[in-house]
Image (tube, rainbow, N blue to C red):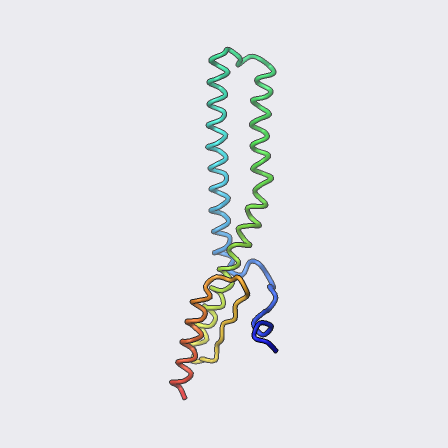
Length: 145
C-alpha cells in the first residue's frame, strides 16, 4: 500500500465543527447583506436625486424602472445567498476538519495515549500543525520507552 493511498480517506460530512463553520458562514452572509443594502441605498438615492432633478418622480415608466431595479437587487441577494453558504462551508471544511483531528489527537495525548498520528486529506489546511503534533507524539512515545 503506497503512502498516498494510506493517507487518503473519504469525507463523511461537511459540517465537522458546526459552531465554527456556521459562525463563518453567518459573518459572510451578514457582509453580503450589508454590502447589498449599502449598494441598494446608494443606487436608490442616486436615482431618486436624478428623478427629482428632472421632475420624473411621477413618471410611471421611471417609477416602474426604479421599482424593478430594487426588486432585481433583492432577488440577486436571494439567489446568491445559497452559493455563499455552500462556498463558506466548503472553505471552512478544510480548516475545521484538521482542527477537529488535532483536538482529538491532543485529547488522546493528555490521557497518555501517544500512538496518535494525524492524517489529513490533500488540500487541507494546518498541515504544519498536524505534522508538529505527530512529531510531539513520536517524541513522547520515544521518551516513554
